[in-house]
Length: 148
Image (cartoon, rainbow, N blue to C red):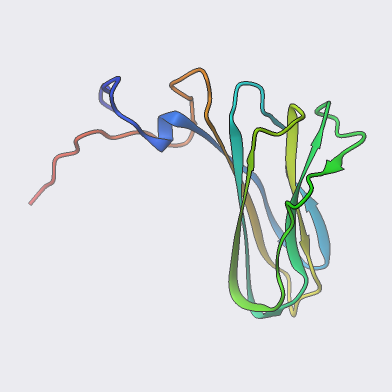
């Protein structure tokens, strides 16, 4: 990784990306990890599910709480995204801006499907007041030269 210019705008240095869950599931309610939103403007959850059969009743939603223990979670009103009936890869995006409580998480309901299938939930926190953000498992490349 080379040096980066302070003028470079990059999702890699301006957001925090975490995989909240990666599960093989069938007929399950899955819950992402608690996210500390202190200093962030918002979080975008990207939920995905892959199934070769028709999936009915799959949905994702967000919750908030005053502590990271989520002892009294509250569903965020209007945050439910769902699919009535889809086949194949299901992807839904849920963007929560300026949550009222410090702690936020996403939940996913996987209905009874023909077979267990993969469900993934990724969180992208953005609008951090302290930059650059530190992400692990990757690197930023700036002004990369092509090769022949």
